[in-house]
Image 1: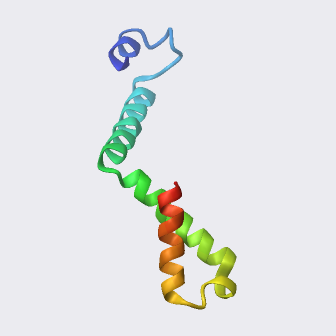
Image 2 (image 1 turned 60 degrees about the vertical axis):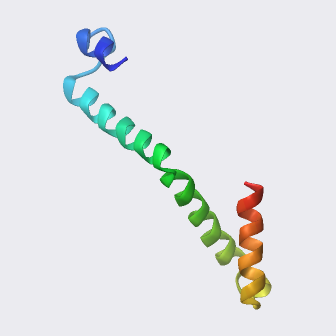
Image 3 (image 1 turned 30 degrees about the vertical axis):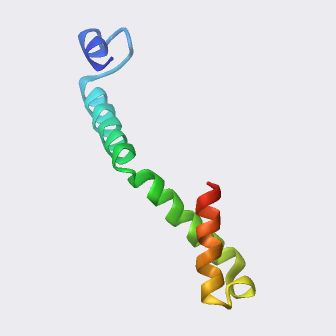
Length: 76
């Protein structure tokens, strides 16, 4: 796909600098997906949001907190 765009930049209203930036971003995204880092980042962000939203009202017990977060991860 990138080679096709590279051969005719004007047709796609692109510059070589823009194309290189898109290639770099897509390569980074692809690597993140392959390594599972994207999924791990999502889960960690979700855990933080749950902790902030529910705070002390639900997570007074550390064991319950760990089990609850594992349950959410399993459901996802």
